[in-house]
Length: 351
Image 1 (tube, rainbow, N blue to C red):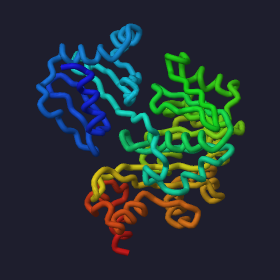
Image 2: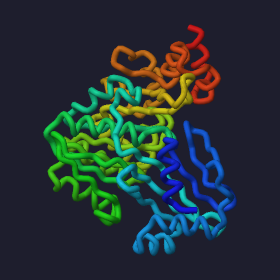
Image 3: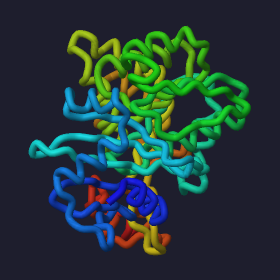
């Protein structure tokens, strides 16, 4: 079994992921469902190791053997890229490969809300794309950044681990920096990025106190910052950012966040009744009411503000799920499974 064959199969089936794991056949994920690759036998530990090692260079192999895990990207013959996490489980090597298509989809092609176009024109502030793993955050972020690159004569700096979508120089020039390949750490890259004359900074993922603190500082100094975070809702996102700081700094961070935050997009990908997957989104836009709730630490008020501010482009996840059900794009049971407040969804669908 060769890695070439498995990568091509993943690309041809338009699968989102390929899993290599000893004890099972190679598996692909299509529209959120894991399926074995037809006609492939169960992988042995040796076969899995050979497949994974065929994807890495000597330096990456050494890091993987020492650290027991490695994030990296792999370009397959110009057809597509893969974001790969190689790891050990039960003392055996394994890997999860996320397919990154060469073509960056447009915002409208992703069925994202129109307000996303507005975010591409902002001059400064902090915009977060959030949601669980595998819900399309990276693709949404890439589509927004690509629109910025097409429409504005500026400098975009991205910091990623690893680089996923490849941006081209258009009206904007784009510097893409990968952890380890182009810089030694998130902290160094974020610190030096202010000396690189950026207008827009994209942070692939805010992982810890240092990256969140740096992102806030960059936004506060007059830049437009985009980042992703693994949270379930707008209110939870705000709480996560504040809670990562020591208690004696939290009042300062609430003030900083209330003034720099521009928007939060929290998204899920749902199986559509017409095939494929469709996004449901929660949208927060920073208005005086939101800013005051953040500054005063009253995040419990945020859901109420979202529910009553539709004219500002805001909505809760349940409001968008109810819309998808009423438009017959997803069924009610699927929507219930993705809702954070199922009882609120049922109320909205009856209304």
